[in-house]
Length: 196
Image 1 (spheres, rainbow, N blue to C red):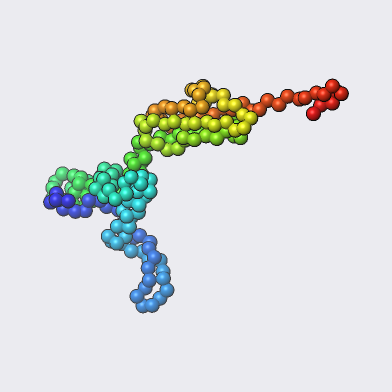
Image 2 (cartoon, rainbow, N blue to C red):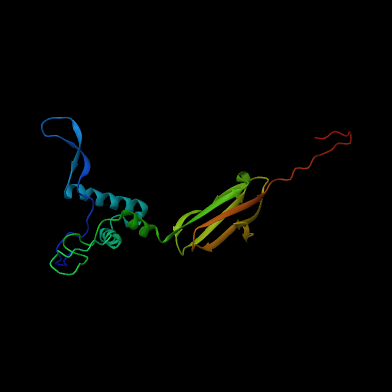
């Protein structure tokens, strides 16, 4: 990276890690307890795979992904690293210990969930719900099923729109209900007195 700083950049579990292995004397595959970089590196590779699955836009953006991992690491200062003062980064732990949960929360932190549901469920078809970037424009649409009539969109029982197409800026998680009126069935009475 051109910093001239001693490595590592990040540490991960690498002592006493259970792993699959094959003994060299021809014995069948066994579980081994091993230590070292060969045990720590897969933890970091797995963290990268998780972040890329959570945010496909990060795929191939190695420097950005690395920065997320470094920024979310749990700092482990070390006073035995060329200085009398504990510091981070340092040449023993780098920026600290890998924290996959914190990294994932950072990736997902700028997102909100928009849930949509129809009442009654057979009343219509809805589009536009899902996980979106905070601050983005969201449009949800309610299309009434045959015989049903769209009434309104509500959130926690409060009306937010009377239009089937409802657009808003996503700032927080929302649960929207599209309400439909069922078909009105009137009995038909014939002159003979029977009902149909």
